[in-house]
Amino acid sequence: MDYLLLFLGLVLLVVGGEFLVRSSVALSFKLHLSKMVIGLTVVSFATSAPELLVSLQAALNGFSDISLGNVIGSNIANIGLVLGITAIISPLAIDKDFYKLNWPVMMLLSVGLYFILKSGLQISRSEGVALLLVLAVYLYILIKRAKNQRGSEPVDDSIDEGLSKTSNFKIIVWLLIGGLALYGGSELLVSGAVSLAEGFGISERVIAVTMIAVGTSVPELAASVIAALKKEKAISLGNLIGSNIFNISSVLGITAIIQPIAVKSPEVLTNDIFWMIGFAAILVPLAFLPKKFELGRKRGIFLFIAYAIFIALTINS
Image 1 (cartoon, helix red, strand yellow):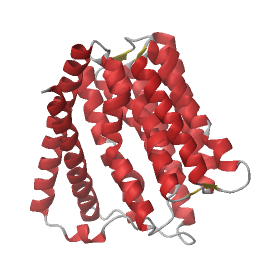
Image 2 (image 1 turned 60 degrees about the horizontal axis):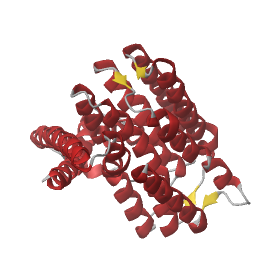
Image 3 (image 1 turned 90 degrees about the horizontal axis):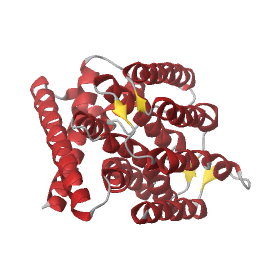
């Protein structure tokens, strides 16, 4: 029964996330926002909605280990699983924004999260506000840089312009379906995870860092694999790790403002967060050594094996 709850929860999160992205993009066109702004802000927020709903639901129910484990595990999965598998299928292009903006911001937030959690063993409301302010500054720089590059680089062509013709009624229906599916999915996923953890005698943290994290990373994985298989355009490493920035700053930031997130398992600070920082840090030597500005098959296999080791050690800990 617990497995069924988890499965249904994940399905609802994927469905809800898709409807929320479509309705958000359609609404953005109605508000006359450019495709560039929609891609950098609206879509990024919408694709972080599954993580946000799960973390918020868990925090409100007193399972803060799931809130933290979900975000930390998702960030590890985004690099080890998503980047790893995508690079195995098709090489990932490494652009200047990776080492000039995206990677430094991701490292700043990852290391900053460690010190926030270590200092007070929680993310307080004021620290949640600080995380959102970092996100605001990051988005401002991102949009400004994108506007400067607009003449030389194509705008994100993954956004469906057909959504600009969507009726107001459809947008409202999609928003309702997306919101309800995300809410229901997060409820089922959290309750199923807690029951499963109790049944197997393992912590909610382990379930969150492994199973739930992979589940909430499914949309990113599916989108990246499809793009790699179609080889329609170069997949930017910077765009993929951008979701890690949103996970820490918006998901944990918003959740902490509504309900402060406490550290209940010491393993979060002694194990999980170091894996997250390690996966983020290893991207620079992988990107620049020995010579190419791309993440090829061998490096993808390395990331995937490292992720498999992390999962095995976490489950057996």
